[in-house]
Length: 288
Image (cartoon, rainbow, N blue to C red; front, side):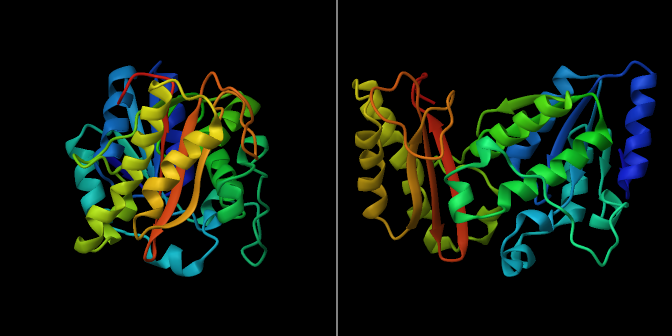
Protein backbone atom coordinates (compact mmCIF):
# COMPACT_ATOMS: atom_id res chain seq x y z
CA UNK A 1 0.00 0.00 0.00
CA UNK A 2 1.26 3.44 -0.94
CA UNK A 3 1.10 6.04 1.86
CA UNK A 4 1.23 9.63 0.60
CA UNK A 5 1.57 12.66 2.83
CA UNK A 6 0.08 15.36 0.62
CA UNK A 7 -2.98 15.95 -1.60
CA UNK A 8 -0.69 16.99 -4.48
CA UNK A 9 1.00 13.59 -4.48
CA UNK A 10 -2.38 11.86 -4.26
CA UNK A 11 -3.74 13.90 -7.18
CA UNK A 12 -0.83 12.81 -9.38
CA UNK A 13 -1.25 9.17 -8.33
CA UNK A 14 -4.95 9.22 -9.21
CA UNK A 15 -4.22 10.88 -12.55
CA UNK A 16 -1.62 8.21 -13.32
CA UNK A 17 -4.16 5.47 -12.57
CA UNK A 18 -6.64 6.96 -15.01
CA UNK A 19 -3.92 7.23 -17.67
CA UNK A 20 -3.56 3.46 -17.27
CA UNK A 21 -7.34 3.07 -17.71
CA UNK A 22 -7.81 2.10 -14.06
CA UNK A 23 -11.09 2.92 -12.34
CA UNK A 24 -10.79 4.42 -8.86
CA UNK A 25 -12.90 3.76 -5.79
CA UNK A 26 -12.46 6.45 -3.12
CA UNK A 27 -13.32 6.28 0.58
CA UNK A 28 -12.94 9.60 2.47
CA UNK A 29 -12.43 9.18 6.23
CA UNK A 30 -11.32 11.00 9.36
CA UNK A 31 -9.44 7.94 10.58
CA UNK A 32 -10.18 5.91 13.73
CA UNK A 33 -11.28 3.24 11.29
CA UNK A 34 -13.78 0.49 12.12
CA UNK A 35 -15.73 -2.23 10.32
CA UNK A 36 -18.00 0.35 8.76
CA UNK A 37 -15.10 2.01 6.97
CA UNK A 38 -13.72 -1.37 5.93
CA UNK A 39 -17.09 -2.31 4.43
CA UNK A 40 -16.85 0.81 2.24
CA UNK A 41 -13.31 -0.12 1.24
CA UNK A 42 -14.40 -3.66 0.42
CA UNK A 43 -17.16 -2.43 -1.85
CA UNK A 44 -14.77 0.04 -3.51
CA UNK A 45 -12.40 -2.86 -4.22
CA UNK A 46 -15.20 -4.97 -5.67
CA UNK A 47 -16.47 -2.25 -8.01
CA UNK A 48 -13.18 -0.70 -9.20
CA UNK A 49 -9.76 -1.78 -10.38
CA UNK A 50 -7.96 0.32 -7.76
CA UNK A 51 -8.99 2.10 -4.54
CA UNK A 52 -7.74 4.85 -2.28
CA UNK A 53 -8.61 6.26 1.13
CA UNK A 54 -8.10 9.70 2.65
CA UNK A 55 -7.44 10.24 6.35
CA UNK A 56 -7.98 13.83 7.42
CA UNK A 57 -9.64 15.13 10.57
CA UNK A 58 -11.23 18.23 9.12
CA UNK A 59 -11.20 21.18 11.55
CA UNK A 60 -13.64 23.08 9.32
CA UNK A 61 -16.51 20.80 10.36
CA UNK A 62 -16.00 21.07 14.13
CA UNK A 63 -17.83 23.91 15.80
CA UNK A 64 -16.21 23.02 19.13
CA UNK A 65 -12.41 23.01 19.47
CA UNK A 66 -12.61 20.58 22.38
CA UNK A 67 -14.60 18.14 20.24
CA UNK A 68 -11.90 18.36 17.57
CA UNK A 69 -9.16 17.72 20.12
CA UNK A 70 -11.06 14.75 21.60
CA UNK A 71 -11.72 13.07 18.24
CA UNK A 72 -10.02 9.64 18.34
CA UNK A 73 -6.75 9.30 16.49
CA UNK A 74 -4.83 6.06 15.84
CA UNK A 75 -2.97 6.42 12.54
CA UNK A 76 -0.71 3.39 12.90
CA UNK A 77 -3.69 1.09 13.47
CA UNK A 78 -5.55 2.71 10.58
CA UNK A 79 -2.67 2.17 8.18
CA UNK A 80 -2.33 -1.45 9.23
CA UNK A 81 -6.05 -2.08 8.72
CA UNK A 82 -6.02 -0.48 5.28
CA UNK A 83 -2.97 -2.44 4.17
CA UNK A 84 -4.52 -5.69 5.40
CA UNK A 85 -7.79 -4.97 3.58
CA UNK A 86 -6.50 -4.26 0.11
CA UNK A 87 -6.22 -0.48 -0.03
CA UNK A 88 -3.88 0.61 -2.85
CA UNK A 89 -3.17 4.15 -1.69
CA UNK A 90 -3.91 6.24 1.40
CA UNK A 91 -3.24 9.94 1.63
CA UNK A 92 -3.22 12.60 4.31
CA UNK A 93 -2.82 16.37 4.23
CA UNK A 94 -3.03 19.61 6.13
CA UNK A 95 -5.42 22.51 5.67
CA UNK A 96 -2.55 24.47 4.12
CA UNK A 97 -1.96 21.68 1.62
CA UNK A 98 -5.64 21.33 0.73
CA UNK A 99 -6.02 25.12 0.36
CA UNK A 100 -2.62 26.33 -0.92
CA UNK A 101 -4.13 29.49 -2.40
CA UNK A 102 -5.27 30.72 1.04
CA UNK A 103 -2.81 32.68 3.19
CA UNK A 104 -2.34 30.65 6.41
CA UNK A 105 -3.21 33.78 8.40
CA UNK A 106 -6.62 34.02 6.71
CA UNK A 107 -9.68 31.93 7.43
CA UNK A 108 -10.80 29.50 4.76
CA UNK A 109 -14.10 30.55 3.13
CA UNK A 110 -16.71 27.84 3.57
CA UNK A 111 -18.90 26.55 0.77
CA UNK A 112 -22.54 26.68 1.92
CA UNK A 113 -23.99 23.22 2.41
CA UNK A 114 -27.01 24.17 0.31
CA UNK A 115 -30.61 23.02 0.45
CA UNK A 116 -29.80 19.59 1.89
CA UNK A 117 -27.88 21.16 4.75
CA UNK A 118 -30.98 22.89 6.08
CA UNK A 119 -32.56 21.77 9.35
CA UNK A 120 -31.57 19.08 11.87
CA UNK A 121 -27.74 19.07 11.76
CA UNK A 122 -27.68 22.75 10.81
CA UNK A 123 -29.64 23.61 13.95
CA UNK A 124 -27.48 21.67 16.37
CA UNK A 125 -24.11 21.92 14.61
CA UNK A 126 -24.19 25.25 12.78
CA UNK A 127 -21.55 25.39 10.08
CA UNK A 128 -20.77 21.67 10.33
CA UNK A 129 -22.14 20.67 6.94
CA UNK A 130 -20.65 23.79 5.37
CA UNK A 131 -17.28 22.54 6.60
CA UNK A 132 -18.00 19.06 5.27
CA UNK A 133 -18.94 20.36 1.82
CA UNK A 134 -15.85 22.58 1.73
CA UNK A 135 -13.34 19.80 2.44
CA UNK A 136 -15.15 17.16 0.39
CA UNK A 137 -15.05 19.55 -2.56
CA UNK A 138 -11.24 19.54 -2.26
CA UNK A 139 -11.08 15.78 -1.74
CA UNK A 140 -13.18 15.18 -4.85
CA UNK A 141 -10.90 17.49 -6.85
CA UNK A 142 -7.81 15.64 -5.59
CA UNK A 143 -9.13 12.22 -6.58
CA UNK A 144 -11.03 13.30 -9.70
CA UNK A 145 -13.28 11.00 -11.74
CA UNK A 146 -14.08 8.05 -9.50
CA UNK A 147 -16.72 6.38 -7.38
CA UNK A 148 -16.84 7.78 -3.84
CA UNK A 149 -18.26 5.67 -1.01
CA UNK A 150 -20.10 7.08 2.03
CA UNK A 151 -21.98 5.40 4.87
CA UNK A 152 -25.71 6.00 5.26
CA UNK A 153 -25.28 6.61 9.01
CA UNK A 154 -24.48 10.24 8.17
CA UNK A 155 -27.65 10.54 6.10
CA UNK A 156 -27.91 14.31 5.79
CA UNK A 157 -24.21 14.47 4.94
CA UNK A 158 -24.75 11.98 2.11
CA UNK A 159 -27.38 14.31 0.64
CA UNK A 160 -24.98 17.26 0.82
CA UNK A 161 -22.04 15.45 -0.79
CA UNK A 162 -24.27 13.92 -3.47
CA UNK A 163 -25.51 17.43 -4.29
CA UNK A 164 -21.88 18.62 -4.45
CA UNK A 165 -20.98 15.79 -6.85
CA UNK A 166 -23.87 16.74 -9.12
CA UNK A 167 -22.76 20.37 -9.07
CA UNK A 168 -19.15 19.68 -10.09
CA UNK A 169 -19.96 16.73 -12.35
CA UNK A 170 -18.12 14.00 -10.46
CA UNK A 171 -17.59 11.57 -8.73
CA UNK A 172 -20.38 9.02 -8.67
CA UNK A 173 -21.44 8.92 -5.01
CA UNK A 174 -22.32 5.48 -3.65
CA UNK A 175 -24.24 5.43 -0.34
CA UNK A 176 -23.72 2.17 1.55
CA UNK A 177 -25.81 0.63 4.36
CA UNK A 178 -25.00 1.40 7.98
CA UNK A 179 -22.88 -1.26 9.69
CA UNK A 180 -24.01 -2.07 13.24
CA UNK A 181 -22.95 -3.82 16.38
CA UNK A 182 -24.93 -6.92 17.39
CA UNK A 183 -26.85 -4.59 19.73
CA UNK A 184 -27.92 -2.46 16.78
CA UNK A 185 -25.67 0.48 17.68
CA UNK A 186 -24.37 2.09 14.50
CA UNK A 187 -20.59 1.84 14.23
CA UNK A 188 -18.91 5.20 14.70
CA UNK A 189 -15.40 6.36 15.49
CA UNK A 190 -16.92 8.17 18.47
CA UNK A 191 -18.14 4.91 20.01
CA UNK A 192 -14.64 4.35 21.40
CA UNK A 193 -15.20 7.38 23.65
CA UNK A 194 -18.17 5.75 25.42
CA UNK A 195 -17.70 4.33 28.88
CA UNK A 196 -18.66 0.70 29.49
CA UNK A 197 -21.70 1.63 31.58
CA UNK A 198 -23.03 3.85 28.77
CA UNK A 199 -23.02 1.11 26.13
CA UNK A 200 -26.45 -0.32 26.96
CA UNK A 201 -28.13 3.10 27.13
CA UNK A 202 -27.01 4.22 23.67
CA UNK A 203 -28.65 1.17 22.10
CA UNK A 204 -31.96 2.92 22.80
CA UNK A 205 -31.27 5.00 19.69
CA UNK A 206 -31.62 1.88 17.55
CA UNK A 207 -34.65 0.73 19.54
CA UNK A 208 -36.31 4.08 18.89
CA UNK A 209 -35.70 3.73 15.15
CA UNK A 210 -37.18 0.22 15.25
CA UNK A 211 -40.25 1.59 17.05
CA UNK A 212 -40.87 4.04 14.20
CA UNK A 213 -40.28 1.22 11.71
CA UNK A 214 -42.84 -0.98 13.47
CA UNK A 215 -45.45 1.80 13.37
CA UNK A 216 -44.79 2.26 9.63
CA UNK A 217 -45.16 -1.47 8.98
CA UNK A 218 -48.49 -1.36 10.81
CA UNK A 219 -49.68 1.29 8.36
CA UNK A 220 -48.89 4.55 10.20
CA UNK A 221 -48.03 7.37 7.76
CA UNK A 222 -48.37 10.49 9.91
CA UNK A 223 -44.89 11.98 10.55
CA UNK A 224 -45.77 13.33 14.00
CA UNK A 225 -47.05 9.96 15.20
CA UNK A 226 -43.88 8.29 13.92
CA UNK A 227 -41.76 10.92 15.67
CA UNK A 228 -43.58 10.37 18.94
CA UNK A 229 -42.92 6.63 18.71
CA UNK A 230 -39.19 7.38 18.77
CA UNK A 231 -39.50 10.00 21.47
CA UNK A 232 -41.30 7.62 23.81
CA UNK A 233 -38.28 5.29 23.75
CA UNK A 234 -35.64 8.00 23.96
CA UNK A 235 -37.24 9.95 26.78
CA UNK A 236 -37.17 6.83 28.97
CA UNK A 237 -33.37 6.69 28.58
CA UNK A 238 -30.60 8.88 29.99
CA UNK A 239 -29.70 10.16 26.54
CA UNK A 240 -29.94 13.89 25.90
CA UNK A 241 -32.03 14.15 22.74
CA UNK A 242 -31.13 16.78 20.16
CA UNK A 243 -33.64 15.63 17.60
CA UNK A 244 -35.80 12.64 16.76
CA UNK A 245 -37.27 13.55 13.40
CA UNK A 246 -39.05 12.24 10.33
CA UNK A 247 -38.21 13.50 6.85
CA UNK A 248 -39.21 12.60 3.33
CA UNK A 249 -35.85 11.36 2.00
CA UNK A 250 -36.77 12.14 -1.60
CA UNK A 251 -38.03 15.67 -0.84
CA UNK A 252 -35.73 17.03 1.88
CA UNK A 253 -37.10 19.86 3.99
CA UNK A 254 -35.73 21.86 6.90
CA UNK A 255 -39.02 21.54 8.77
CA UNK A 256 -41.07 18.38 9.38
CA UNK A 257 -43.24 17.18 6.48
CA UNK A 258 -47.01 17.22 6.80
CA UNK A 259 -49.71 14.82 5.81
CA UNK A 260 -49.65 11.26 4.54
CA UNK A 261 -46.12 10.09 3.68
CA UNK A 262 -45.26 7.62 0.93
CA UNK A 263 -41.60 7.36 2.00
CA UNK A 264 -39.88 8.31 5.23
CA UNK A 265 -36.50 8.50 6.91
CA UNK A 266 -36.29 8.47 10.71
CA UNK A 267 -33.30 10.42 12.04
CA UNK A 268 -31.93 10.77 15.56
CA UNK A 269 -29.14 12.77 17.19
CA UNK A 270 -28.48 12.38 20.91
CA UNK A 271 -25.69 12.83 23.42
CA UNK A 272 -24.41 10.44 26.02
CA UNK A 273 -22.21 12.56 28.23
CA UNK A 274 -19.78 14.35 25.91
CA UNK A 275 -20.28 11.88 23.05
CA UNK A 276 -22.65 12.84 20.25
CA UNK A 277 -24.26 10.00 18.31
CA UNK A 278 -26.40 10.07 15.18
CA UNK A 279 -28.34 7.34 13.40
CA UNK A 280 -31.19 6.94 10.96
CA UNK A 281 -33.36 4.33 9.27
CA UNK A 282 -35.41 4.22 6.10
CA UNK A 283 -38.93 3.23 7.09
CA UNK A 284 -40.46 2.31 3.73
CA UNK A 285 -38.23 -0.66 2.90
CA UNK A 286 -37.64 -4.12 4.25
CA UNK A 287 -36.75 -4.57 7.91
CA UNK A 288 -32.95 -4.27 8.35
